[in-house]
Image: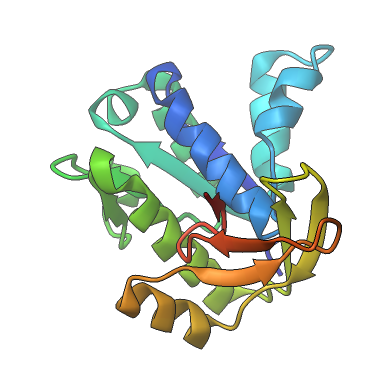
Length: 186
């Protein structure tokens, strides 16, 4: 069962990592990104090792800068060393580091990053049970939990170019969700 994810990224890719954290939050998967900033009593190396060991899945974001980052490559090496499940998100044109070159990455272009996040969530759904969806209502701001839409419904919405539909359990307004990331769309 996958419930915790470690995201490796370089400093320049922080916006991409934040988008990934939000997408994982929506499907109730915990990310060690926030823990990393909180556990200041531990050295950065200890926080990294703890985060990777405690995670069920390791996701490196590999842009040109990320693939060249010494820290990201060290994290990849440690994840490989502890036999962690690795699902790389790789920018078009970037070569995978040698230790994970045998893996099938999810390739993205900067303008279609949300498509890659949708593929990642779909793959995670195939590997583990994702039953719940967290949504923050764009109208009243309340956070609610609902059953996640079946994958067939998500695929129909993607093919049709439409949104998923739900209703806020607080203000009762209809909410349109992006079928890739499950984020509300106004």
